[in-house]
Image (cartoon, rainbow, N blue to C red):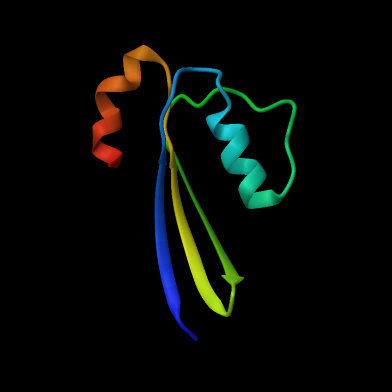
Length: 75
């Protein structure tokens, strides 16, 4: 079976929903009580689409200004 890897880095201001978007993709549901990240989170998900195995590597970065100097490390 053919395999693909997709690397995603979520960037944006604090509170815009980066973590909620990532968790919805991973778990298939939204959590109304998601807290802001204080650092980057790393998530993975493997799925089969059109007969191909696709593995997603997701970096969910912190949006607070004091952490913005760290975000270039993730892409």
